[in-house]
Length: 381
Image (cartoon, rainbow, N blue to C red; front, side, top):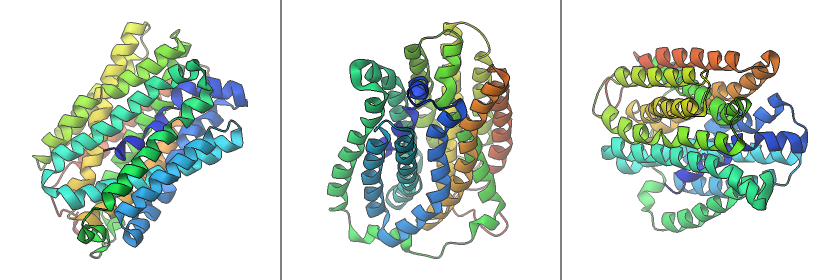
């Protein structure tokens, strides 16, 4: 869970600081969106590499490498120039991609009979750490660290995780270390179910990362302070915790998760509609609804990676595919929203785009939620 706590803060901390970053560097809105979308592009580009590293080095050693790289990338990004920010962000995205793919694989190796509860804690850890980082960004900036220090401080968490993880894997049973390399992995890209899971993962990522990047700016344009915008983003992510904890447990008990997909999409759509209504109280309420809805979709996306795979090698293969396809879709959201905001001068078009994405997530999630638990990846899937 300490490793999991490093897989979101370096990204979610950026959104509340985009205004300062743009003023300091002169970036356009679309370019500033790269600070959030570039990690997602790296998720897509390096997810298959993560599968290879897991098979070559073991999941444990690859995850240790990821924590070290994440700390280095966070330091480089905080140096202050546009080039350093983009280079550091590239390293950060590659490091997190390894964790995204291999940590669920490791969990499958170790806790296969407790999938629901452990995936719930895993998803909640991702959401909580993301929300805390978003909420602390502006206060750390205001405390004298500047946006550079506010983003660079997360290198400390990655360094701590690297030291703790190294001590843990030194005691891990050697029989576990090569588990991900065992067994032949089928060509899951030929399976409809794998594409449904991947597309669903991508559409929920588009919603999440689009809002992580631009929600504080949207609310700032509506009259909310920068600190208030960061707080709303933190509320959105903290509100996802109940769903993140409960949904994997409930979903793992059923062979059909379609009702959860529909419920999450409806709640998320209502929350997005609330952003069009003025008033800070309504915006906070909308953030709560979005958090609950997207938290449901996000936790389902993670849980599908395990429920739809028979063993650890299949989890790695499906995770690599889902996160390659999914984050390639997700990376388009921050840039598209920034472009629509610049092109239209308002937020109606970006919010409408997000509502359309919710519909797409519903349709693909409906297909991904069908089937039996365990080894459902057959040629007829």
